[in-house]
Image 1: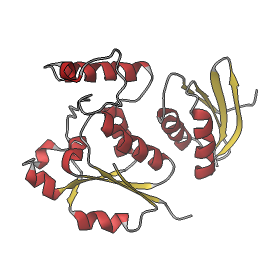
Image 2: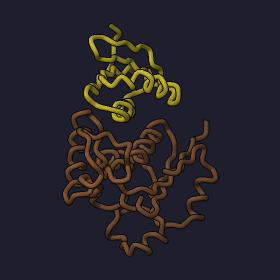
Image 3: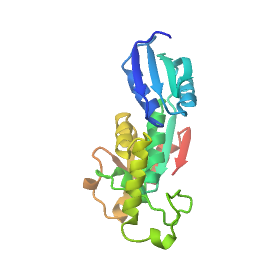
Length: 76
Length: 155
């Protein structure tokens, strides 16, 4: 598993909270740092792709395991 | 890239219909949009210091019900409060944010809230009823921002 600088557990939260919490977490990080996000909302998969595309942050990894979704977002 | 702009007109004052403006505004703000919500008519309820919004199934055949229920039964006293309570519980169990939380996130993200002055006067609201720091304006105020917006929604 990739390295990360900060972790955000958005399990149990529904749209748009995982995105909003991620945005907040990234706000406190510096460019190049990686945020690891855990979510259970299946909509988060497409939403984090769209979030990355529109904000200049890079989604370096996205995978599902045992009903949870894991994302690695590198701050742009 | 210049900042994109989202202009929303919020006209509905029921619990369920208060969600779209706040969800879209907070998400757009997180994506870097500058956002304004112009609240008019029943949408003014979104600006009240204490939001006390209700959901109703009356006139809304699309609302999923836990059990089939004749319309006249849905109209009985107390049903609206009960449905609102059930909806809130369901949302909580599904991890959906509360309206208060979403509105707070909007304010944190500097979403600009505007109360339609004409309808404030019409319903005899006073600025004490509403959140501090909101703006008051008319149709022309709305167009000043909406005219330059990339997305404009009427909700």
